[in-house]
Length: 318
Image 1: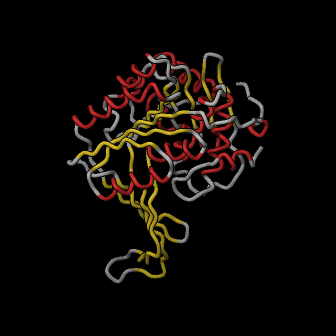
Image 2: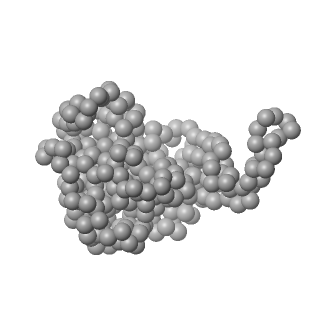
């Protein structure tokens, strides 16, 4: 396995002309922050006294927020409910400078992940979700066709919430127009991602698809076989404290994780695929883009909750 030059040797390109289109499952990450000082007299559970709340775009919305934070012109397509969380998402995305096409489904409840946090620790997460309507998804596909010409790279952010029912057609249309397609996969059926440019599974996700491995050689063989079976240009495996490995025709390139305290890994995968897309759209090679994405991941895991990495933070490490 070859090891590229250190990410600290990388120059961050001009990203202002990069145009990214993200399609996938959006959600509202809602945080309730407070303190715990007593146990409930009603049951043996902690009582959290909530002092402030915060909403952030999650899922594909967090991918879009990361692209925008890196200076790219960012478009987003998704489905939300005709409800307060959907309206909150629309406001947050607009404030982040994201051109969001949020198709409303009156039968859908916008996916919400409510996290209760006390003393910088997550106590509880409550999820609200259901699947979108087929007709609304068809309307989103039509808008996807219209927006394709105005983007450089497509990200398909699959959180398994039903928003990417037409993903096979989206990949076909994008590749037909010569657009690189990056997929953050979900589930154990990767055949739906066939023909994409790059998929970015983590270790658990890849293991669910190709089975366990007992050595780096066996892992590389399984990753390369998957890449061949699906007709992919690359598989980028994110490996948490082990960094990340890129599998291509040229073999395997590895980037070690940056040594820093890990505070919260939620949303790190969003940052990786967003950074990869923006850097590719800005002229980087896949290996160069991976090195910068690894650096960005090291920055966001030191933050609480779904977070972004800015160009200034990346450049501060050069």
